[in-house]
Amino acid sequence: MFRFKSLMSWIIFLHVVVVIATAIFMPLILYWFLSTAANDLHNQAMRKQAEAIAQYLVPRAEGGWTFNLPLDLHDLYSEAYGRYAYAILDDTGRTLFSSRADKIPIFDLNSHAAEAEYLNIRSGNKIIAGASVRKQLAGRTIWVQVAEDLAHQDVIIDDIVADFFQRVGWVTLPILLVLLAIDIFIFRRAMMPLIRASEEAQHISPAKIDVRLTYDGIPSEILPLVTAVNEALDRLEKGFQRQREFTADAAHELRTPLAILRTRIETLPDQSIVKSLHHDIEGMSRVVSQLLDSAELDTFVVNPDESVDLQLVCAEVAELIAPLALAQGKTITIGGARDPIWIRGNAEMLHRAVRNLVENAINHTPKDTAVEIELTADGFVSVLDRGQGIADAECEVIFQRFWRRDRRQAGGAGLGLSIVKRIVDAHGGTIAIKNRPGGGAWFSVHFVRS
Ligand SMILES: Nc1ncnc2c1ncn2[C@@H]1O[C@H](COP(=O)(O)OP(=O)(O)OP(=O)(O)O)[C@@H](O)[C@H]1O
Ligand SMILES: [Mg+2]
Image 1 (cartoon, helix red, strand yellow):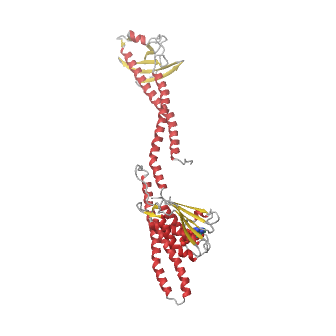
Image 2 (image 1 turned 90 degrees about the vertical axis):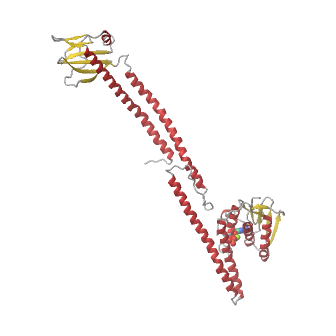
């Protein structure tokens, strides 16, 4: 079956169908009720009139009847007025008295009829409706027939019914349309908490898994869904937590065997093997400590009260890396601002970020090239090298964990830049990659000044 994608369109469609059906059937049903009620009233009135006329009929002792209608009633039933008529018949159907000059019974006599019969005939442009009432007077049966011409100009009951039909028909439609508008309004209001909840859900990410949908204003019909989503998020958060703990624990547990390995190697007799094994163990230790850094960063939040001198951090990193650079015939220089540059952040984390960038500039560039650290007073720190640079297509993937341009090459695990990115993000900073004129990569990080 055809279904609307939007709940709102579905509701509006159903409403319009109901509005049309109601606009058609409601006036018809009301019209039927009203005309039935009007008909009943008319029948009763006719019967009462027949009973009233019967009171003026007096049986004579010698047989026959005396019938003296008061003048006002006489006028009412006169042919000149033309609205009402009466006829009094005996049980053979012979007319005894009649308001009509032709003395013809108003209705054909039905001797099997009940005590009162209501009849309706149409002749010409006249609609004759009335009652035929059976009476027992002095042991004789007579019939009193009274009728009214409904087409007479003084009869208003038909006009009322017809008028009602038109009016109700026209009033129903606007009322139903107003109801439709109110329903749409109510529905939109009811949907508001749901729209708000979906906006809240958009903020949930692996980095921000502690967000929960608020229960405020959520309709009770939707509440189970919101509760289920929040419970699912609880379980996800626990899963994430366990994974983080596992990475941290695994990295931590690896440190002891590595230390034992290091001391055991020392005891080996062949010193040339010891040297190359040491190099391998250093590589492994680095990966293990990068994994620990990574796990730590997952839950790291900057303390807003902490400030760091970016200038000092860069100087420390340069000093730390200088021996490594010198061993490869490279130089490290710090240029730009010389005064302290205070930024909001964690010294240990910023040190890691800058160190990783400088290590990359040393490790991924050819021998005998220069590495520059450039600082500006407004919180920019740039690391520039003379290596092959970063292709445009690599600018996004380079920050992914374990991404390396050349996997066959020995070296790190490809975690360094992902750590840098997360440290920068945690500090509310930005990182950009450019290629230098004349070749080489240019990593530029901007931190917020305190
Ligand atoms: N300055 C650079 N010049 C050219 N290529 C670079 C530069 N810095 C990083 N890269 C490329 O990006 C890759 C990812 O760098 P990343 O620092 O994340 O990992 P890594 O240095 O390989 O290992 P580690 O986890 O030890 O840092 C590197 O393997 C390298 O191919
Ligand atoms: Mg690196």
